[in-house]
Length: 121
Image 1 (cartoon, helix red, strand yellow):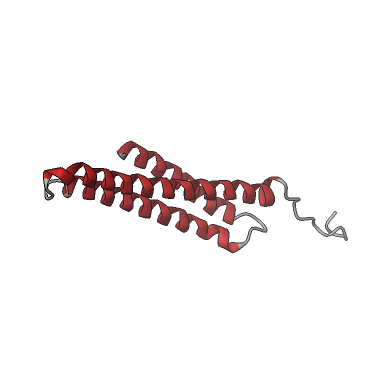
Image 2 (cartoon, one colour):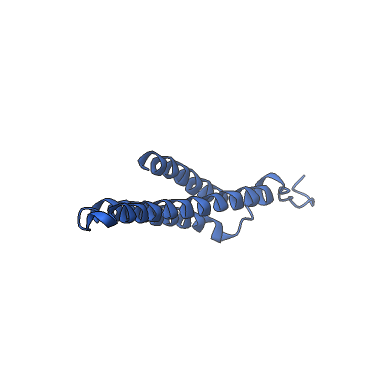
């Protein structure tokens, strides 16, 4: 779980940088710069859910009777994996939205034209 969280942290930082860069481009709506905070918040919530799920899995196993240990362990691991999968899915959707916004405002955008009256020749 830790290598996966480290990988998604690097991807999150890349997405945040990308959103900040894209938000500074000409003609891009101001809300795009704030997508960086959304990305970081989603990663923090996913990491917290994963850590709390693993803590629940391994911490509560010592406190329950032996017949329920496997059930508690499975529930905690399931909670951790679901939190990680949800946050990774949201990060993937933000990345796809970033591609679309980059296409619209950077790659396919026409540069602003200067007036053609003198003295702008």
